[in-house]
Image (cartoon, chains in turn orange, cyan):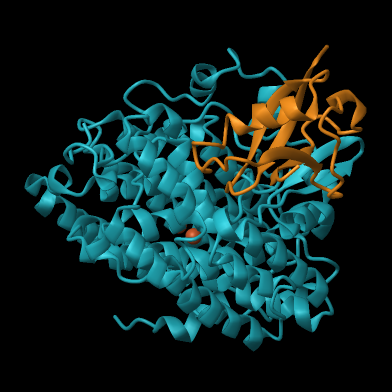
Length: 86
Length: 497
Ligand SMILES: [Fe+2]
Ligand SMILES: [Fe+2]
């Protein structure tokens, strides 16, 4: 259990933002943490969609239950948070 | 008594490349400071300045310029223009003074480097005047806002900004330090006077002078027009230096310096001048859009100047042209959203009429940046101001030290250009910012952005209050919406306190 800073590149938003999560958090939990700083602030919610996490540099989509510490992400590395049907 | 006309003796008396007897040339003109790059003294003597000014001519002209600007100020002081000015215009002035007054004073050091260490006598002579110019620009731009400090402490940031760790001040200093303080005389001539001053200060000063005249702010219009006459003179030191470098086989090196600093200047102006011209200046006083100014002053004039010298357009020119439609809109939204962290009150500039203007100047604005402003506007109308204020920091580019931004909404294209160098992960707002870093990692690698400092625990407590404390922003100084959200149809328009 340790704090892990990430850079959130949220679909539809204009800026990348610092979001600090726990390294034991799942990708779904990371997505929720990122949403706090974008959804209903500058990005309208999209009911029926789920938020998925992608590695920004490669486009690799992480499984929803994967833990931050198992992703191979570096501290402050940028992730895309995207709206998805599944 | 008859007097020689200055053009009869100027060339002779400024031929000052004397032969030193007590020290070797290498000590008189150390390479680190002079940057002669192996080009012989005779070649530097071919430096032919377009303006040939003697000290007595210079002093007489400057005295007149100062007298002109100061007398306009004195005559209009009692009219209290500022009290009735649009709050967006007040913000324009406060942002301008804070970002530039002390930086101009600092530019005297860069001019002094050329005045002392240039191998070209003409360059040394011109730079001596350039040094005096920049002292004048520092002093006059501290003096003019000073009368307003009784109105609000934000005016005091004309002096204070550059002495703080406020993020925009950090970004400006990083760029100015790179261009003015840490380079040899030849690099200063190229980067500061040619790329920055001919390219960009022209636009800030002429663009703003046009808007100031439209807004009826004759004091500010006369002030910055007065400054610009100096800039357009001393900016001409870069051309002859470039000519000498190119003639002596150093074109690639010269080109690279221009490419690096042009991009850095563009980024700085995208956060300073872009929001001012397209969002803060009241709609009815906008002469041209930021993009139109850029097209006229940068694309038109700068392109021609590069061409005349036999230089190429920077390799990223297409990307630069593309970014003219985008970057400053993102920078503006960032400044507005993180408004407590700036020393002026950003004007949103997003009322229905202003949005119409933006859409006409930047087709597609409503479907991109407009989407974010839709959510912001709705929140204000619902009484949810809290959702329009930040609860985290933006990711900051390790070159320009500005947020990593792009187009939102339907055209979402935000991209972070990352780089791992010696084990450290760096973030860059564009491919060009990353390229600048890669040209000279030793120069840049040690710098910590405000976010890096936050994560390293240098900012305590680790929240907005801690960040404001770190940035030196006290109550009465922190920014808020310039028009108290009247643009969103909320409440009544109130003048900023
Ligand atoms: Fe200046
Ligand atoms: Fe200057």
